Length: 65
Ligand SMILES: [Zn+2]
Image: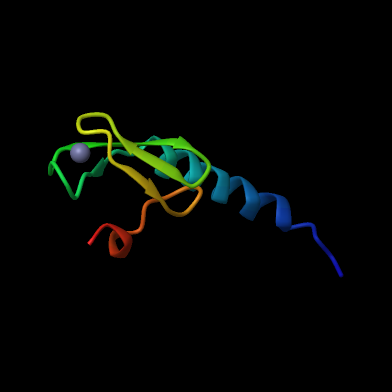
Protein backbone atom coordinates (compact mmCIF):
# COMPACT_ATOMS: atom_id res chain seq x y z
CA UNK A 1 0.00 0.00 0.00
CA UNK A 2 1.35 3.41 -0.97
CA UNK A 3 0.86 6.30 1.38
CA UNK A 4 2.52 9.10 -0.60
CA UNK A 5 -0.64 11.20 -0.82
CA UNK A 6 -1.59 10.62 2.77
CA UNK A 7 0.43 13.54 4.10
CA UNK A 8 -1.45 16.04 1.99
CA UNK A 9 -4.89 14.97 3.12
CA UNK A 10 -3.82 14.93 6.74
CA UNK A 11 -2.57 18.49 6.46
CA UNK A 12 -5.89 19.52 4.96
CA UNK A 13 -7.74 17.81 7.77
CA UNK A 14 -5.59 19.58 10.34
CA UNK A 15 -6.47 22.95 8.83
CA UNK A 16 -10.13 22.05 9.00
CA UNK A 17 -9.79 20.84 12.58
CA UNK A 18 -7.97 24.03 13.59
CA UNK A 19 -10.72 26.12 12.03
CA UNK A 20 -13.48 24.15 13.70
CA UNK A 21 -11.71 24.24 17.03
CA UNK A 22 -11.41 28.02 17.09
CA UNK A 23 -14.93 28.57 15.85
CA UNK A 24 -17.59 29.84 18.21
CA UNK A 25 -20.90 28.12 18.51
CA UNK A 26 -24.32 29.29 19.55
CA UNK A 27 -25.39 28.31 23.02
CA UNK A 28 -28.75 26.49 23.16
CA UNK A 29 -29.48 27.94 26.60
CA UNK A 30 -28.58 31.64 26.43
CA UNK A 31 -28.58 31.88 22.61
CA UNK A 32 -25.27 33.72 22.57
CA UNK A 33 -22.38 32.89 20.30
CA UNK A 34 -20.13 32.01 23.20
CA UNK A 35 -19.51 28.28 23.16
CA UNK A 36 -15.86 27.45 22.88
CA UNK A 37 -13.95 24.21 22.94
CA UNK A 38 -12.64 23.66 26.47
CA UNK A 39 -10.87 20.35 25.86
CA UNK A 40 -11.23 17.33 23.65
CA UNK A 41 -14.95 16.67 23.34
CA UNK A 42 -15.92 19.27 25.94
CA UNK A 43 -17.56 22.55 24.92
CA UNK A 44 -18.37 25.30 27.37
CA UNK A 45 -20.48 28.43 27.10
CA UNK A 46 -18.55 31.40 28.44
CA UNK A 47 -21.72 33.30 29.28
CA UNK A 48 -23.91 30.86 31.17
CA UNK A 49 -21.46 28.05 31.86
CA UNK A 50 -23.35 25.37 29.95
CA UNK A 51 -21.20 22.31 29.35
CA UNK A 52 -21.69 20.11 26.32
CA UNK A 53 -19.96 16.82 25.59
CA UNK A 54 -19.62 16.31 21.87
CA UNK A 55 -17.15 15.68 19.10
CA UNK A 56 -13.50 16.37 19.85
CA UNK A 57 -13.08 19.00 17.13
CA UNK A 58 -16.49 20.31 16.23
CA UNK A 59 -19.87 20.83 17.77
CA UNK A 60 -22.61 19.10 15.87
CA UNK A 61 -25.83 21.02 15.52
CA UNK A 62 -27.95 17.99 16.33
CA UNK A 63 -26.52 17.64 19.82
CA UNK A 64 -27.52 21.12 20.96
CA UNK A 65 -31.11 20.91 19.86
ZN1 LIG B 1 -24.90 29.91 27.27
